[in-house]
Image (cartoon, rainbow over all chains, first blue to last red; front, side, top):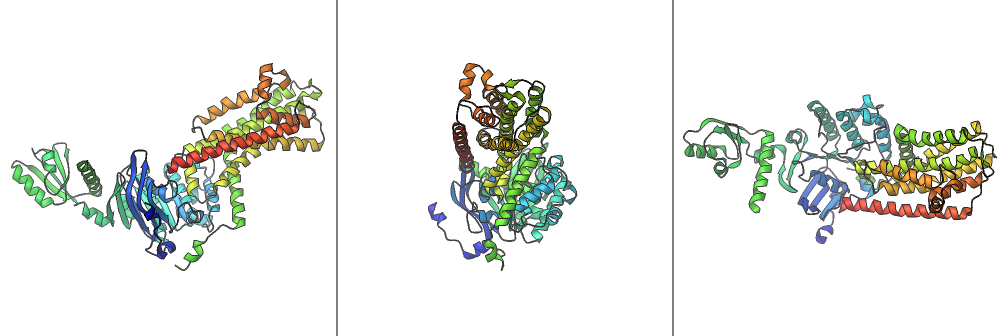
Length: 319
Length: 267
């Protein structure tokens, strides 16, 4: 891995011009005892884009963010932000972060938290602008402990952007929020994108990635399993769902070519298929009594489930 | 982007750094002042003891010193110990255990500012407790001493906050967020008793007297007592040596805890 560390940094990467890589993981492995949180992961965040890191709980998303923030060191591989070490204080001055935190000091008022964090940066936004961007102007005099869950998330979000950083890391920004609060935060995030900020956000909601991201990287169990625009990710997963009532065994059907995943849903069988036509042909050939056949486009959540299941099955096969 | 070469070398101006430290200290103080469980207990408890034992029963003398004056020194030490220990240890343990310190570390805050703010907070609360004790003593306990001695007394006791803030950091690095307050009480109350902060040293059982000589709060109380005219057996230099040595020891332990945390994150 020493070879990776001596890689010279292309000049454009240091400057972060539009479209250039501003933060990266190169061949990064992070091991906690026997568990691989990340396994040889490559990730590039380009200037001006919103990259969503999508994966189920425990996939390694938070670990990736912590590495990029210098809160953890890779077991092997290289982490670069603006071409330098994330631990460099000068790097931190250009970064904002929203982390999952169990408890925030509750007796400080919203504007006091903002005031303090703004003082850490060289060119922070004016307080009114931060409050407006975070949508928290009306609660600025409230103590943090008196806020609702959605309001708390918005304050943490405002702390990430108050320093007017070039790059913002958002770790599961909408986790635990209801639909309404989530939509509000999405709007705030879009405002940042419009201001030209580079954003890396982690989520386990495919819909969130689809709504916000220019590019999506799907990770599962520490491995990158797919990468592309939201549309590419959806098409990669086949996008067809077959539902029918059949006497065939799920394990048999799982072996048909073009089948991604099979599960029994009450009386019916539900099949995720990349090639729906050939799967339907197989089904009809093997079960003349098959009934209630429906073929539909897979939903976003189905696509995500299919992707991660496929990966899990492959991992099982490798063992 | 034409601004990149400029932003590559961004750095805080000395003025910005100064303001940053001031704000960190201010908000650390405000944050704790607004927690009644902390601010009320560390301020009111020593004052209440003083009113009960120093003012109601204060017409006697201890040696050639009035009880009311004597107890300003010892309850002052008690107050300083509580303010410093609870302020630093409880908040550090909670912020370490519940993730807030990660948010701070990910931000561009200089780590040193975080510790300076904790010391500042302990010192400020110590100043409040000691000042109020002195006001009570002068107003209701008939305590009379030259202004210079008053300043010296407050200054000594407040300076005595530093070793116990260091002790608080050392404890805070090895306690969970929930166990910290209980553990601090287990240390704080026996330590206060054995150092002669509640019952005057000369009335302590012999065994406890021998233990007291090894306890830092005893030495701070002796420094304060000498200012009000009550002379103990050791020289001031001995007391200062113990307090300085104890401070360094605690800072060493805190540093070890800090590194342990870093390695856990980096492991």
